[in-house]
Length: 212
Image (tube, rainbow, N blue to C red; front, top):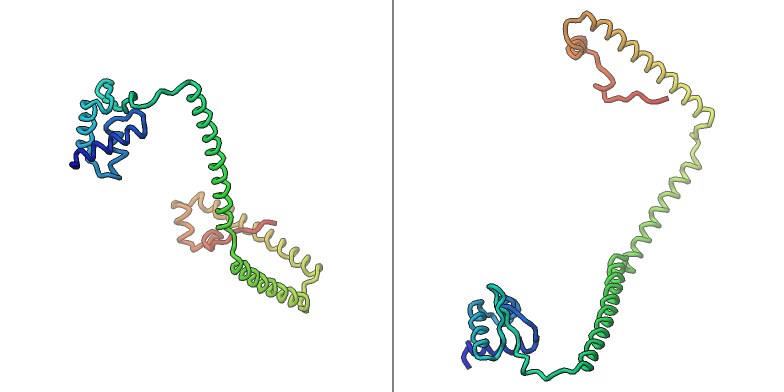
């Protein structure tokens, strides 16, 4: 059998097996990878098979559709068709059940893959134990320290802080008012005045006035 005849035989067997309409492009796409057919060879083989009466051809506008000769298949009764439909329905139900099971197993697999292995878990436990030991040591040092700040001392520090912050705000406001008064008669811009006088602002020192 020549390569041409062998290709035509493969295409004929494929159409008879699938028993559904295909264009030459469909057959080429489905068989090219497995058999290495060229598109032109597929088109010619299908046209020849149709001319030989081995397959049927239908033309829809510019497109040709090919399908197996139905005369070769035995007639199917209504009862057999119904039985086939029922079987297809059963198989579809089984397929859906299998797909659902696969999705569930895939989810479980992802969870297992993201979980720690026993050696990894033991290693993390040891790290946590070491971290806890460090915290306990720090806590013990704090408990045994003799330089604790009493509530009264803490309150005194906060009061002094508030006094200094208020004074800071007061002096900043006075300086701003004085600069504003000078700038009313100053011929240059505020930026030039600040540079010439050598004033350093809180912003220049990257300092933010604390809140009370």
